[in-house]
Length: 220
Length: 237
Image (tube, rainbow over all chains, first blue to last red; front, side, top):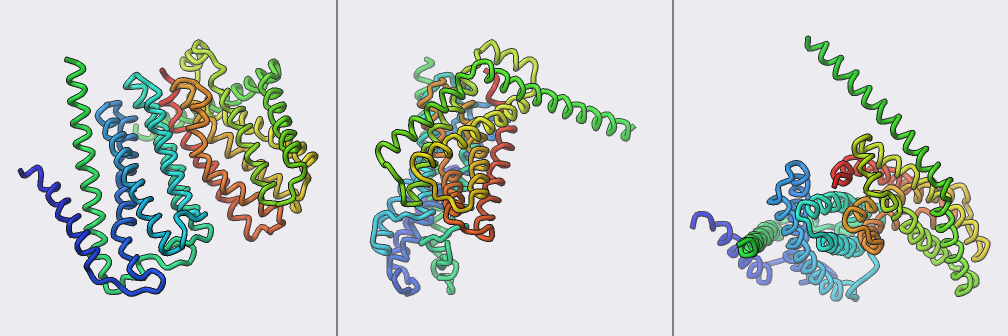
């Protein structure tokens, strides 16, 4: 039981996010109105995605340092869960954009960066599937994922700051730090980030256990 | 004692650097000599570029809209670059690679390929530009800046694609894998270079465009450093 406290914490935090996120008091803003609540879902999912991508990067580097397949499994599975959160974040963002900007998709650096990231990780999984040898697959995909991550950082962090963007927090638009003068948003935002990340780790650990079972069945 | 050790390590690492530079120089010369003897890659790519431009001419006749002109130019450039660089690791047999592995520093191998590919893509870019302006019209107002854009774009494309071609050739060597792996990674570079060259065509000054040039140089530096660090893990099989 003492090993599972974080799973319970994750469930509690996510219930809290949903309940407080929909029922809690939010600052009244023009244009945004009640859609500001998407901050609790869209932005927090992207945060969880970034955290899991960094986990994937760290384990890719770790693999190249030690050549232990265990690190490679974690790198792959965390990238997979990051991709899941990426898709969910993209969908919640699209719903928000429809009601705030009037279109599901607009030509914007931030949005294109998100789509580009999804493409890179799809290519990463494709690269993994093209090889059979475990060690070779792990080594080559680790190299690709480190390289791709560096390029994506340029894409989603540096490029949007150089150009105008509609996205909140970019190109002169107010970010969320200017909305929450009374910290009402922060009270839900940070628990939500932790909740989604823990949920991701939970899914990841289940998948890794499933892989180990498959491996044991195959080898017996 | 400590000082002596320090000096010994210093001289060793200096020697190491000199050996690497020597290998690098010889490898670059080898690449050019090989190309000069075969002339197949360059001719193939140039024919590819010229015929693509000609097809564009037959379909568009004249491109007047500047963003379209710019986008079409760089799309041709990207496809030609992927084709040109894809061969840089695939044309070497396993025997040659084993020979390199016993003999050379991995950093020298990858950097020599990047240098060679940069020159190759610069040639491709210039030929592309000449034929493109011949057939589809030329509206560039700041020629010097546009040529700098060609240089930066070729260097960026060459460095990024060289590492990706090493990854693809180790994975299974199919050219389609190369395209799949490289296109998403190229998007940030392409967006920057297209904006830079569009500003050059419009004649927008250095005050605005300088930032893009700097970020392209920084991107190139980052890619070369990453290639240098990561290639040692790729080249042994």
